[in-house]
Length: 328
Image (tube, rainbow, N blue to C red; front, side):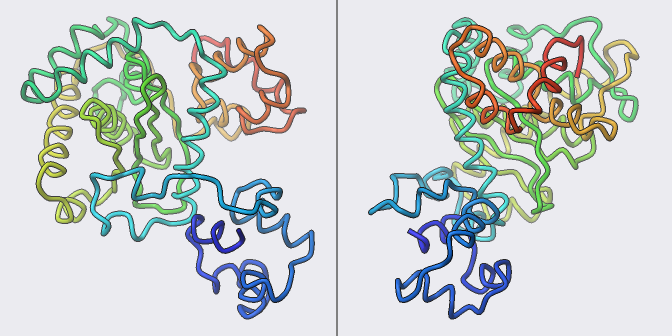
């Protein structure tokens, strides 16, 4: 179990030894069964490195869990082989959020999901430009859309709400692997998009739209910031879809380059130095409201709410007000 958890987390024995401040031979001894870590070391491995429950290590067999290659079957191994442990954890976190959403939003408006399903049905039947026009028909831009002053176009915050209106759930996150722009994971009712909140706002807009379009093409995807280098690893259908998704995103962004009022865009990268504002921005208003509605309806308890929000129980009240604010 220790070896399985380490390998799934993406760490070498030497890296674990360095982080735990023990010789590599000791970690090998733990994994071979020759020696046992202390309980404090077990907790440290679980919480700090592997992001697992410590009780996992007492199972007889590893749980059934998809590998990174199962999650992204269309991507070549060369694109997935260098993923940082933090990136691997983010992907597991995204799957966990999909699990939470089954509890938080079991009655999500069917018409919202139908928008994405209809677009998915049309994705392969036409070119990306006609798909962009169809998407606009479903999701007509509001005349008071926010504008990014840096580009004159619709803001990243606006595109986030636009995509979430079609049935996706968008989360922001910092990535230790700086060349990760974002990724998406399909799930019939709760497709999710993760975006690196360290990106510039225009790049965040493009990433949100590109990941949304990958969901339309039924393509779990990881986007790297160096696109020219990244494209060299793709071929066949994967390359065709990648190019179509880039065109889809560009078409939408170009269309709205000069539309909208000069409402200040929201700086999605941080909450102005306030921890709770930052957490609210990362989770998004849609997710926050789903969580607190579920809690108020007594479909989840405080412990589940705390887990779904990723904060301690005593911090919940600080986040609740952001769910009902006009904007976050």
